[in-house]
Length: 294
Image 1 (spheres, rainbow, N blue to C red):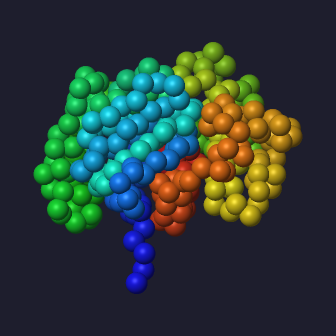
Image 2: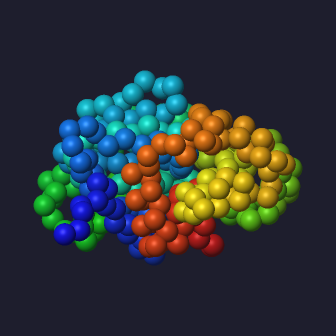
């Protein structure tokens, strides 16, 4: 008899009319084997929204106070790990691409960077409560029905905030180029002044251009290793690193620990999500998703 996996995940590609706003929609089940909750350290990513039916998780980014007892959880874009622990629960979620955050959240991304919030009690996220209620009311429906509820909500059930700056997609596309530029090259690629680039990145992406470029480089290395540990860290690190010590410094900045410490942790949630996400979407993590071209 096959052993039941503690985490199962299913990913759904948003339809064409919602392309560019979301990394993906997903549904998952968490079922710890025993009384202890399942825990993991999740890597830096774009902002996201998660809805829980069952045990509500405890979530904490870096040294921020933990959030518990919330069935609607909104996270801002992150440059630090999110510690996540949960008992048995069902979960629906999505990741906001920068254009999606600007469109459906409408708040400066830097204001919510590296923070976790109860969507029912935080005013700026209150318009997502009807989505949580609809999914929880239909909790026994099929995953296809759940994804349809999410699609309909973002088509017709929630406001869109303003006409979005086309430079969001231009900057995003430049950030995921294989040959990572430096900040001045990034500004030149995007045809904006460096000070304008700084302002746009803080507002729509949550961080400075320099940090975003560092995060991209680090996430490429991390995902290579997570998907193929046989590479070891030395075989996984991005060629843009000067040397291994340079990578170790970034690991401490973005994960809060040395590479050897991270390797020693169990990753039941992260591993399950990355493998299934890569199978369905072709990209193992949000930060490596390619934005659609206009």
